[in-house]
Length: 148
Ligand code: HEM
Ligand code: HEM
Image (cartoon, rainbow, N blue to C red; front, side, top):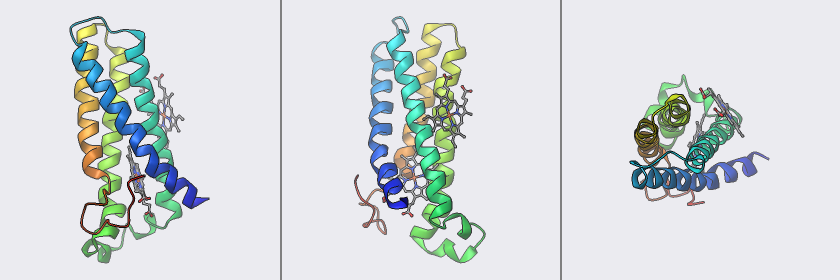
């Protein structure tokens, strides 16, 4: 069960990344036009994909014993342990806050240009933080983490 959740969490990274990039490209190219229903839906689906990752990530964090290591200072010298216990958690939680704002602040704006600008800013920051917090297999120490 937990292996399945991990595969799902790993593969869903691509859904999150593709939705973020698509939303950002469309927001940039249409930024002086009207904010249509498709763009609002795209922003909503982007946020939902990020929330699903949050839920799956929390399950992994507790079930795979990473949370139990949180108060243990000896993990700080071990790249992989420090990464999943602290860095991945903190980086992704901040990214998820920005990703949620990218949807909820757009909903609250009345001006179309402001809606596009907010998508560009908040989803843009979320994308950078997510790219930086993924355990890419090319990073030293993460060769065993997969691409999917
Ligand atoms: C958009 C958000 C996120 C993305 C794109 C993402 C992506 C990933 C990826 C690609 C892996 C590697 C999986 C593997 O090697 O099989 C991973 C592992 C993991 N993620 Fe996330 N993650 C996100 C958010 C979170 C959050 C919020 C948490 C915790 C609350 C979390 C907890 C974990 C844990 C504990 C692992 C390690 C599993 C293990 O090897 O024991 N993730 N994540
Ligand atoms: C630990 C898990 C989760 C937390 C802490 C969380 C948190 C939140 C928060 C704070 C909001 C309000 C955003 C706003 O102000 O508009 C929200 C909205 C929402 N979340 Fe999540 N969420 C989680 C998991 C999920 C999952 C698993 C899904 C879907 C499968 C999901 C779908 C949504 C949707 C559809 C909205 C409303 C969007 C709207 O129409 O405004 N969330 N969530």
